[in-house]
Length: 453
View 1 (cartoon, helix red, strand yellow):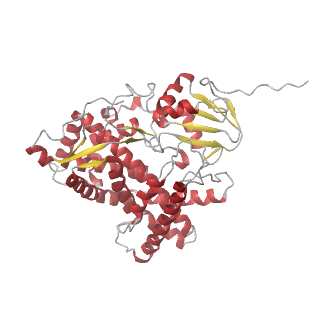
View 2 (cartoon, helix red, strand yellow):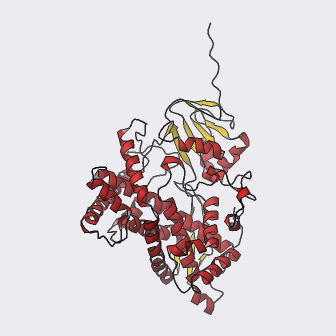
């Protein structure tokens, strides 16, 4: 009689089986994931899903995406063929590579010079209203910022369609297929409209762009299409993906940033003082050239992304038999990485739940973080292409708006963790007051209570 040795599996919480710990997870996703650290660096969530709790294992999984691991769902949460032999995957990665070349210093510098004026224009409208729903308002701003970066000054209906696509999107974390639902049909209809508008603008950019105009991502993709290296449909798909992903993550991160500054007035004063020193007393708007001198603001941005990474839950499907931390993995299983958990690991961060922007300023060389201990935009070959742009947009926006406005949490609007697809402060309402108004009426828009975890 031949006996088969039982399959070795990593430790995990009681209840890991066919249905795993889904109910406990759905009641409190972030708390559940943090609790799993007690079981080690690789945890069995369910028979088909393992959780990674170390930067080293996260690097192994994310760096081998497209080989041992794949992404099995597309932008809209639909099942897709992400296998190693997929022709669609090859075209997608080629388009990503071409777009990535567009994220060079000159294009980022040109974009950085335009960011502040766009941010202030939106803030002027917010101030006229007096109070805003933070996430929707910041999504409108970030949609315009990323649309201009990808397509140039002529953005047509793109920002509005991106916002409509966001409204129609179904939950993205641990999704349940619902192709029959009216909301799913609406999502695909808006998705088609967005692709058609992007297609129109790319074609127009190809006909009208001038040699003296600042380069945008669409220009490089148009050139690639002209040379036969990429199809027009491929160019459209990469721009749509960047528009949607970058606008959503940037808006969520900015919402957390303004909430944190309101909760920590001493840090807000440091950002304001820096703007006064480096931006002619705060009288001029920041540009890309100012970035090296905005160290405090950059520290605030990084600390915000550490505490509240928009991409809080990343999932990969196992595509071929492999091992992770000595445990065998088989095709069809999934491995999840939570930047939210990695960013709060006391092995890598002193007092990890505290908001301490100074930890990023003049960090000693002997205190270097493991490579994947800070990964707010993912990692590996499928990392967010707009990560550098999003960081620049946050620094410039924070510096520009803090020097001119006070954004304070409105009374009676305590935000809650939203984990529908990205991590965002749902229900956050902000009062928007100019610095001149504060000088006249300093009692307006006082700071909220400090203390955030």
